[in-house]
Amino acid sequence: MTTATLTPTMPSKAALFEAQAVKAGARRNRLLSLPALIIIGIFGVLPLLIICVYSFLVAAPYGGVQWQFSTDAYLNFLFQRDIFDDTLQFTPDFLIIYLRSFLFAVVTTIICLLLGFPTAYFMATRPPAQRNWWVLLITIPFWSNLLVRTLAIMFIIRDEGLINNALLALGVIDKPITMLYTNFAIQLGLLYAFLPFMVLPLYSSLEKLDFRLIEAAYDLYATRRQVLWRVIIPLSKPGIIAGCLLVFIPALGAYVTPLILGGGVHLMIGDLIAQQFGSGRNWPLGCAQALILMAAVLVALFFYVRNTSGKVQHG
Amino acid sequence: MAEPRSIDIKEQPGFRSIAIICLLVLYVPVLILMIFSLNSGSLVTHWEGVTLGWYGSALRNEEFHNAARNTLIISISATIISTVCATLAAIGMTRVKPWRGLAAAFMVINLPLMVPEIITAVATLSFFALIAGTFGLNFGIGNLILAHTVFCIPFAYMPIRARLEDMDLTLEYAAADLYATPWNAFRRITLPLLVPGIMSGAALAFIVSFDDFTITQLVAGPGQTTLPLYIWNQIRRPMTPEINAISTILLLVSILFVSVSFLIARRRAK
Image (tube, rainbow over all chains, first blue to last red; front, top):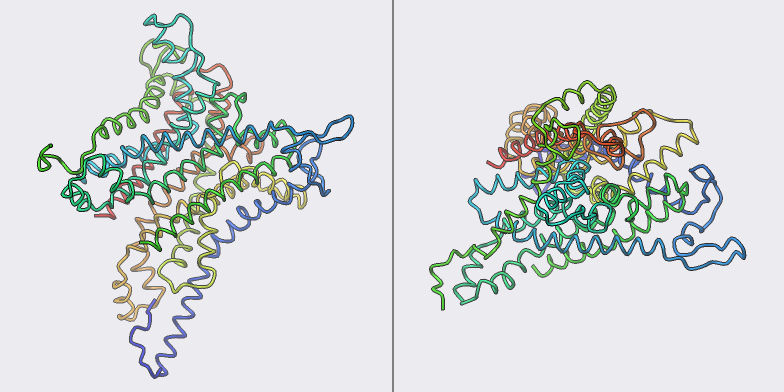
């Protein structure tokens, strides 16, 4: 760590020695990251490569794969082979599930932003002591068990759940409204699950907001609305993009929420993939579906990188 | 025109109510779940009175014991391995001369955060099926520990790296000036200063491992039920408030560890 700050222009023997020591130290330091890289490399990266290979193989009858090259998994994504005349027929079932999931994720992102932005701004404008409490209160659901939180939503919206019981008792309705296992239930569950994922990045961006700029805007006779739309929101753009991404990506690949609140009837991509590894017994198809989801995520990440690096150049 | 001097420049209309609504939306369902764990009726929906009986029956339940034991074995092992790896990696990758492949290494460390969980789950399942089929290798519960370690590393890494970046370099220079060997300087200066970051990282690693459902569900073999899997199995049967009691226990563990991590990080900020 002793960087040679005082190295003379003519390197003395001592300086050379020191430079060598620094180099050796740097090499040692570099090696320290190896255990983490090896573990993630073998048990994180390699499995992703394996599903790339699997997606080009043939399904074995009882799960797993047979080592035989085939592009059927990708063809099956859009087409179904007719059992009688062996022609391919366009079957958009999977595509529809992908589009449904995309819509769910977009709606979730928008509503989370509409609720999360005011919340994050309100938090950022509190006095510091209060601010810490707010952050803790949003952080707790962020890290809490998603399965249990989804279960909590299920308890409320079931036919015998709190909402229906209350409405029945009040005489507003005479038979329970079915909410569980509907699209509404999935949408509600996704919102509930990912709201904290929007608030926290927005908050960390708004916390650094320079309020002198807002003061300047008011001095120049801006209205509150103009200050919000022309000053605060443009300044918090990096936080907005980060928050949207942190909600959109997990919402698109959501598994637990549709599993519990959709009841296996209203599918999203996550359940569809898991199904191929369970009752579907078609691993190659599941791998292909996972990779198509991964491609969608990479597009979203690419959009993010391009946007943020563009900002740095202008900055 | 309104008098501009009289307004609080930070205020935006309606934002306070939305913030409070968000807080209510986040907490009311969970609080209801917790309250119903105290319900003395055997139905999950009708309130009959207060009892701690469901906690008692949960704690006496053999299946719950097994699930809790598995969960603790997996999450404690994954926490220790991932925190050690993350600490070493953070030291090797922070405040050093940029080395070739540093950016790539950083991407690898953060990869588990970018890949949707369901993809990691099926990929890990395929991987373990492959090595079991080809080499006859099966680590038993070690499969789950390894799978958890992978996604715990980035969570442990973040606070440790943040702490390293905030640290005062002059103390290490001073140690070197006083002829401390690099190892001594590390052990006596860097490591003690790094402890809060490591604790905070370990708490986060523990919580993500403890709570994991998706990856565990797909990778777990027979008899490797963890607490989230146990809850999932219970949902599919006729429910009793016992499930609320177990859920509440899980939530309390989360809250405890998040608060610990948060308080450590806040003390750092002071």
